[in-house]
Image 1 (cartoon, rainbow, N blue to C red):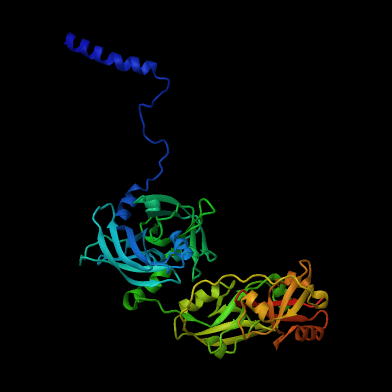
Image 2 (image 1 turned 135 degrees about the horizontal axis):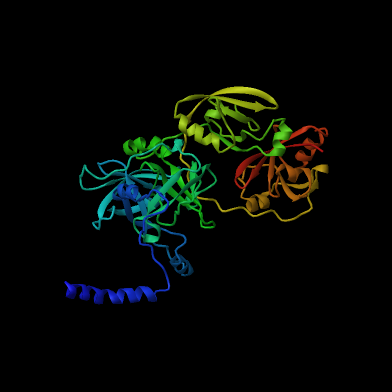
Length: 472
């Protein structure tokens, strides 16, 4: 026994000596002092249904540096094969999965890895909706037992709720980040530079390139969002499409391959403080009608430029971004009740919604500003104008048939600038009267007494805008 004890003492001497020489301390009991729940069990449930998506696409990527080589020699630009990566997640055991439209757009070949698996599985696009950046894909193979994630209720999310984002940022598969819901209803974010029907959840959970299409889940393991947008200019800013928006269109994507949406047929803008004051509105709430599309539901219902739509089926319209979403959700063929203000009077209108037409063409190049030139003065408004001619039409990218007066000079401190007019605006109407040239605009403005309302319809960068001000 003494020999055993001696051996044990000899063996422990190096450990004791090492402990005495260490310039630090260690706890004998390493149990946490504060009980903070771990997200690991939740992550283990979610990860098996998360997809790493690998896409091959054919088409012209205008950012490809090889394009300049072909342009320089006057050669036809070929369709280069492009590869990309993204994320998705399975929503049904049959293999249906959600991702972003921009992840699989123009794809000629799609392969996925499921969870931590190494096998590549082929997938096909079932349906896409560019307006919400949502795509439905299906895994090949005929399996009926794919791991799937339950979809939650994004409307129930509150600012401050914890959420977890799972994806493949920068190709780093099965990466997990955690944060909170920072804000809801962010509508001025355009993933891939494309405008659409967006109503994003903002989160500080890290969402980086490659996360697109991945799930944003709550602490119950339910998907509440589809990771979509990255703000490269800011840290801690990530955006996700509310899952309720996707749930509304997935059945159509599955059955038709696309989503059909209702629309009113009006172009709207926010109500500026100056416009609200000029129109006698109590505040800036509502959507200001800038243009009514001929033959549209709004046209048939008698809507006019200058109308301020304040309620839609008894729901408040806070700003211009509310109206397209409310109309899209109402459904094609639905008859809706609008409340509006026209010329200071409250009115109502019934509109039967129609299907939103396809929008052709890509983004337009921005027009250039008109040159500084003398122009005719319009008194105290602080602008100088000139008749819209062929040279100005070309410079401003204005339709050939358009007529009006162009603002060529603008006093930044004047009444017109304060109301929102800009240099290069083409004034086409004053208080409902068509304007053919600069002289007609001067004449129309001269007839309006000081202190009275001026309602202007203008062409600006290919769109119609409405501006109202009180004549000084």
